[in-house]
Image 1 (cartoon, helix red, strand yellow):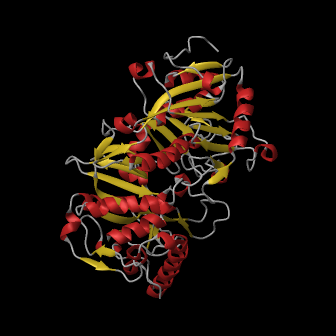
Image 2 (cartoon, helix red, strand yellow; image 1 turned 135 degrees about the vertical axis):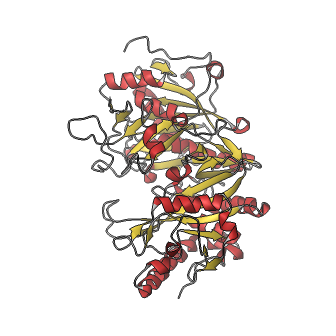
Image 3 (cartoon, one colour; image 1 turned 60 degrees about the vertical axis):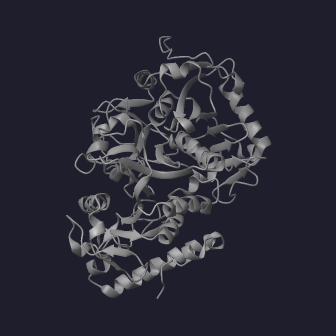
Length: 536
């Protein structure tokens, strides 16, 4: 490897605290250097737009069953242990760390110092150590990039070490299989092995912030996107993958704060990250121009397929995975909020892609309804998106981010509820970006132009001037009219030819909501319980 790849090394840049003394470490390389190394090492190719294309190998998504938290004095009585937060033995963690240390000794590694949290008061110093240069480029894209002056005396608060070729021995090491992502709050260290999926790096730090910010600083961490208008009005968008969170927050008329992870302090919202990690399946310049144009030199696409005999990406090809992705630094977006911070939000949007075609395209929620739907975190998978999915399947993820919540979901919900109740000017909206006129296979996907028009009407206050009616099953308040939207789509029952089929499907979905919520009933208030859908 040519020695001119020397990056920037600060006075405190050493991996001796990890027990690594003899590895060749390349510090804080530029994206251009990391791209060049990736291509030279035959680990990636350039697309026709100059983006770097890589494959993450065996894993093209996170592996929730292989993500663990070390159970120790810090976490034993505070983490919500169960199917999401899997406990790991501290001695076994030390064992894996020692084996990983021995495995990488003498090998080439890439180290990067970066920040999480754009609010300087709450900033977390993160060091990311990777096996491959393109993993380090992902960290450069996704975390906040320090200046050279900030790098000079950088001291990490947390370290992420990701070595995809290191495989665990499940029988000996206490893992489920060969891959793992383990968070140790005492050592402030995340170990990732056996998987090259880059999302494990960023979601590991997100999980850390989801524990530390509410526990120590009273800050609400959120799996949401956020933007701000010309009147300094902040909006936040909660939603699971595929609901339009990144798309809808990337608005040519508003400045993007961030697309995935934020904190809500007393009087401001701030981005955790320095980049965007967007899904690219079926991406087009027409549907999502800002994301499409961001895929240029400095961006990295994952697990895509090229069109025949070309370097042009076929974004419709899901033969490797439905979860094709792009990471890019936030400045690749035309309109960004330079500080990556905004005032406390005035509008909160819960996004769902309801494949049953039952929920209204927009409805206004009361405070108790907001808490109910926040804890529920509903969307639906459609046929063809995953192996074995042949009809719509309801998916619930508490707080729209259950896999990343070390504390009990009601802890975050109570924090959000307190913030909503403290400001009577906050509006909460449920947005269905999914199906209308019938379930998936019968109805049609809600037009993106309609969804944008409804969100714009909520943001500019137009919906404060119209009449609302309540639908029968979920008690949701539906506007009777909305600028630039065909009024017939606003009430979902009016879009179904077979009204009895609508009622039966709505009742079925209401049952799914209530069955899912049983796990939270013991810790939910009466007001929240009363916001549940009504069964017929």
